[in-house]
Amino acid sequence: MKFNHKGFTGIVNVLALSGVLLCFGSQAIAEEYDEDTYGPEAPIVFDKPVKGVDFSHKVHTMDAGLECDSCHDEIFQMEAGAAESAGDYNMKSLYEAKYCGACHDGDTAFASNTQCASCHKDVAAIEPHGDIIQTKPVKAVVFSHKRHTEEAGLDCGSCHDEIYQMQNGAAAANGDYTMQSLYEGKYCGACHDGDTAFASNTRCTVCHIGVKGFDRLHGEPKTDAHGGH
Ligand code: HEC
Ligand code: HEC
Ligand code: HEC
Ligand code: HEC
Ligand code: HEC
Ligand code: HEC
Image 1 (cartoon, helix red, strand yellow):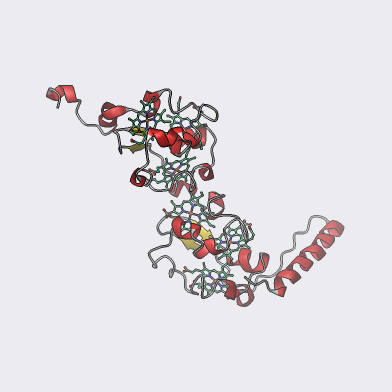
Image 2: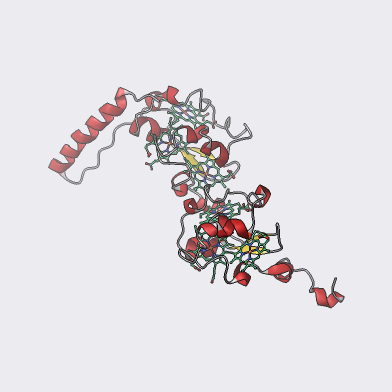
C-alpha cells in the first residue's frame, strides 16, 4: 500500500484551515475535489449480492492518502461492476483478504467483521428479520436475531464470523453441531454457559421448539387432525 504526498498536503491544509476557522469562526471551507487526482467523485454503489454497499474514492484517496495503484488493477479493476460479476464478491472473500478485505483486516483499516454499517449503508438489506429454525441434527431449534441484537444488544460481530458464518445451515454442515460442543463453549455455548446467558444444559425447551413447534411455524396441519403419523 502506498500513500501519496497529496494526502500529506491534505493534512497540512486541514491544519491551516483549522487555524483559519479558529480566527474566523463559522465559515466552512472545503478543499476542491479534483477527479483527475482523486478518482470519480460520486460514490460507487454495490447492489449485488446485497443492496447498499457504498465505496467512496474521496475517503480513500483524498482523505486516507492512498494512490490509485494501491487498488487498481490488482485488487479492483478500474471499471464499476467488475467485482460484482466475478462471482465471489462476498464477506467470505473479504475475510480471506480479497477485495476490500485486502486492507479492511483490522490492521491497515478497520476489520471487515466489525462496523457492518460503515460499509453497508443499507443495513436492513443484510439484517435477517425472521427467526432461523435449525433442523439438523434434531428438529427444531429456534434462533432469533431480533432477540439477540435489538433486545440483548449484541453486535453482529459478536457472532459473525468467529462463532457462526453468515449462512443458514453452515454450522449444521460441520458435523460437530451437538450439545457436547455447546457444553464445550462452541456455537450457542460460547455465551449460553450460565454466565453471559442461561446455560445450555438448562431450559431445553426455550431453544428446542420441537417437531410440533416447527410444524406450527410452517403452517402445517396439526398431526392429530390426521390421526398422527
Ligand atoms: C481503496 C481502493 C481504491 C483506490 C485507492 C482507487 N480506487 Fe478506483 N475504484 C475502486 C473500486 C472498488 C471501484 C469499483 C470497481 C468494481 O466495481 O469492480 C473503482 C472504480 C474506478 C473507476 C471506474 C468508475 C466507473 O464508473 O466505471 C475509475 C475511473 C477509478 N476507479 C479511478 C481511480 C483513480 C483515478 C484512482 C486514484 C486517484 C482510484 N480509482 C483509486 C477502488 C479504488
Ligand atoms: C488499499 C486499501 C483499502 C481497500 C482495498 C479498501 N479500503 Fe476502505 N479504507 C482504507 C483506509 C486506509 C481507510 C481509513 C482508515 C480507517 O477508516 O480504518 C479506509 C476507510 C474506509 C471507510 C471509512 C470511511 C469513514 O467514514 O471514515 C469505509 C466505509 C471504507 N473504507 C469502505 C471500503 C469498501 C466498501 C471497500 C471495498 C469496496 C474498501 N473500503 C476498500 C483502505 C482500504
Ligand atoms: C469493509 C466493508 C465491509 C464491511 C465492514 C462489511 N461488509 Fe458485508 N459486504 C461488503 C461488500 C463489498 C459486499 C459485496 C457487495 C454487495 O453485496 O453489495 C458485502 C456483502 C455482504 C453480504 C452478502 C454476501 C455474503 O457474504 O453473504 C452480507 C450478508 C454482508 N455483507 C453482511 C455483513 C455483516 C453482517 C457485516 C458486519 C459483521 C459486514 N457485512 C461488514 C463490504 C463490507
Ligand atoms: C448471537 C449470535 C448472532 C448475532 C449477534 C448475529 N447473528 Fe446472524 N446468524 C446467527 C446464527 C446462529 C445464524 C445461522 C448460522 C448457521 O446456521 O450456521 C446466523 C445467520 C445469519 C445470516 C444468514 C441468514 C440466512 O438465511 O442464510 C445473516 C445474513 C446474518 N446472520 C446477519 C447478521 C447480522 C446483519 C447481524 C447483526 C445485525 C447478525 N447476523 C447478528 C447468529 C448471530
Ligand atoms: C454472543 C453470545 C450469544 C450466542 C452465541 C447465542 N446467544 Fe442466545 N442469548 C444471548 C444473550 C446475552 C441472551 C439474553 C440473556 C439471557 O436470556 O440469558 C440470549 C437469549 C437467548 C434466548 C431467549 C431466552 C428467553 O428467555 O427469551 C434464546 C431462546 C437463545 N438465546 C437461543 C440461542 C441459540 C439457539 C443460540 C445458538 C444458535 C444462541 N442463543 C447463541 C447470547 C448469545
Ligand atoms: C441455547 C440453546 C439450547 C439449549 C438451552 C439446549 N439446546 Fe439442544 N441443541 C441446540 C442446538 C443449536 C443444537 C444443534 C441444532 C439442531 O440439532 O437442530 C442442539 C441439538 C441437540 C440434540 C441433537 C445433537 C446431540 O447433541 O445429540 C439433542 C439431543 C439436544 N440438543 C438435546 C437438548 C437437551 C436435552 C437440552 C436441555 C438439557 C438442550 N438440548 C438444551 C441448542 C440448545
